[in-house]
Length: 320
Image: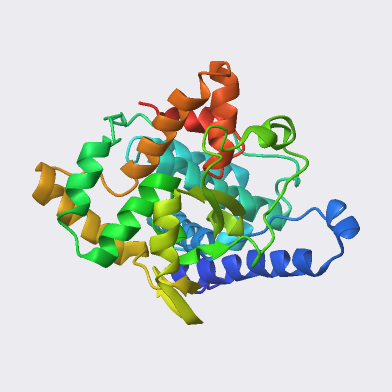
């Protein structure tokens, strides 16, 4: 009877293989990259999410196998579909999608799926609550008044630019790194020139978002001055949620700031929608501004680009 490594070891090894594929991809020229087809993991965050997802899959396979065996690297389409049918009654759609995507990478890696083939989306039967998450300007001010000066500045910056918690740690001057441009993305080609319309009298910076995507953001002149007052003489390395960042400004960010925000929100308002609610606020305010000169669909597309997305329908999640 064959024996297999622990599920966690198998999951980690598979994710390492997928990461190595990405390293190979990055080493190629731009022309070679166009012809390179391979499943890969392109960020530490995705690595961590897929590793946990595959551990969940592996533990399930061990549970249902009477011989208590699990061979993740040779996962079959049938087993993947069976797992998704089982999990759809246990987890919400976001988790189910993450596990489907992780298994899809394994199936592409072992050849059971072609690189252009995917697993069908399975719908979760767990109802997701879609409560409003945006804060009003008055609420943001009240929250920041319950934080120390360093955390309060980060709250105002995140609100003003629609940033994720970890993106606060990545703020740089536009001269320090090239913005990621994806010419194959229709929205970038069609609407990229309209980004920050109505906010021209602002200062441009860049941040690094999900998947290493580098995008331009805008800050008010007042916040830019406050930010520059915190400029570090030398960049410093910080670690947040297991991910390494190089910080250029002495401001709060990541999990520590997010926890500070939640505490301050509960103190000031009696509740908290989480720091991510600031991105909801940004999205809604920008929709109001952009809709003065653009259709709803155009405004959604422009808004999505400013927030680091390329699909307008993603922005709709922030508008509830």
